[in-house]
Every structure is written in C-alpha cells, then in structure tokens.
Image 1 (cartoon, rainbow, N blue to C red):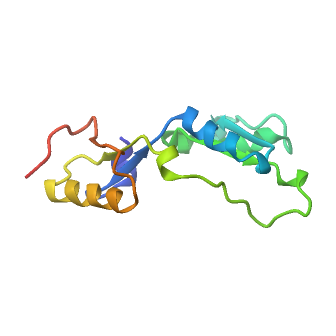
Image 2 (spheres, one colour):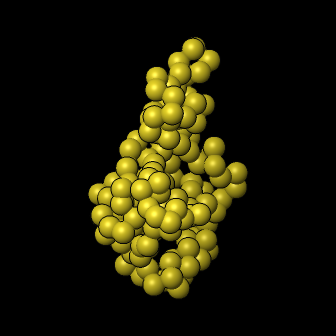
Length: 141
C-alpha cells in the first residue's frame, strides 16, 4: 500500500530505521533539548473528532485520518526555551547512526539494485544492507 501511495514507477527506495536509533540521535543532541518524540495520532475530522486541547503540545502530534498511511513519528523541538530564539534547528547526525537498511520498491530491476548499492557506498554507507520489499522478494532481470 505504501509503495502505491508514494512511488508511481520503480525504482523507489524507503529508508528503514528504528525508534531507538532516532532516540539515540536526539539524546546526543543535548544542546537542542528539550525535544519530544511521539507517534502522530490520526483524528477523523469528518466524524467530528477534534484535538481536545487547542494550543497545547498535542496539536503538533495530530493529523487528519486521511494521512494515517504515513504512520508518522514526530520530533518537536521547543525552541522557545533557547535564547536567542533560532530561525531553524538542524539535528546533527550521521546517516550510519540512523539508517538500518534501504528497502527497494516492488518490481525493482537488477540494474537499479546495483545503482542503489553504489549510491549508498558513495555516501560511506557500505555496511547498510539493501533489502527487497515484502511485496516483491524477487528481482526482475
């Protein structure tokens, strides 16, 4: 389902990570604290569901039910605690600390598999495995 929603034609790739890895990256960014990591709650506005506490932090972790396929996790940085208040905040990280694997879209050609592997290698990510989607375990030649 995800592939149909986001990738019209192969090749496509998704990056797999874990919540634990994301938390570790955030924990190392101690200068950017406070940060909250939370799953997004999907609300059915069409049936009259609304966020209970307007203006409260919950608003940053809610989206319309229409977006539930995203199954999103959000990081919110509370910049109002910093002085002076920054225009933006970058989360310092190494891709190798975050990425568990690259997952190829269904119907990916063998040529594209090699290209994705070379792209990861070029970024210094030789240890990151490239996997096939659960929807398509075979590579088309």
